[in-house]
Amino acid sequence: MPVPAHPRSHRPAVSSRPAPAPASPRPAADRVEIRLPWWAVALPSVAFAALLLMIMSPGQAQAATAAPALGQLIERVLHLLAP
Image (tube, rainbow, N blue to C red):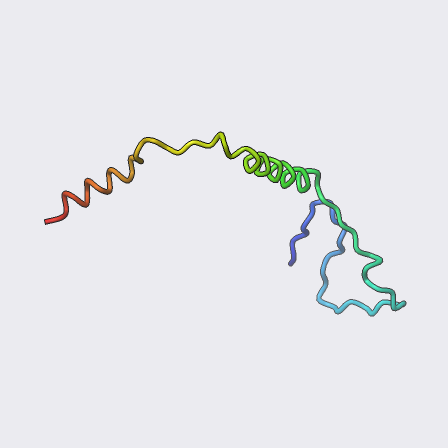
């Protein structure tokens, strides 16, 4: 049984019988209904704006000065295991 994509979709239950043919040969585009929640538009817009701001001001970026702790740990383990 398919799960509706949106909690408010008004789709009839799927039956085992095939659907009857439409009475008029109208294109399916007339019946297409797209409903998006507000966050489906807002979240990508906010993410795009944040990435755009990071690209526009690259002069404030600084390289890390300390060596990563995981790299030091692996280096010491390899040094101890080496003959």
